[in-house]
Image (cartoon, rainbow, N blue to C red; front, side, top):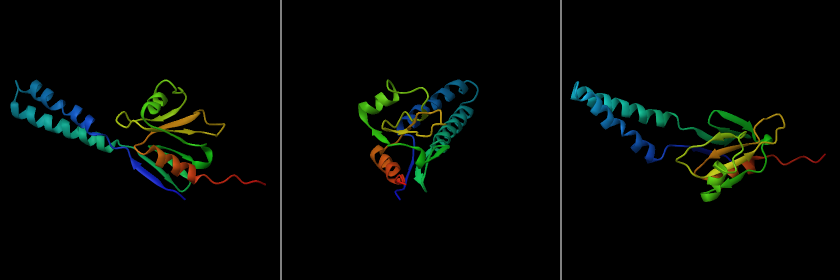
Length: 151
């Protein structure tokens, strides 16, 4: 049974962007105390980095179940998964997006997979999940599905 696991770590861009808290903190606290400004800046940046690290979700296919962040669903309840990259992925996240879809999107990861939900009781028509390896994730989910029994 195919298995897949990926942690959706932030790219360098959010770490660089949050580094702007350093000069901002120093600027605010320098008139009071330069030392306090520097210490506070370092502490706030460390908190931002920690938040980025701890909030990185996991996408996993294991034991007939798909887990994406805090959500999970049985592979038996999903249809044929489609991978998207480049311009097609941008369309899936934008113009083609159904407002009812369940999303696990990270702006720093462009490729996505669309995972149709075949459970009639589920209000979401599909999941849209960011992944750096869309073909591998789609293959893992599609390969984990049990063949339909013909009674």
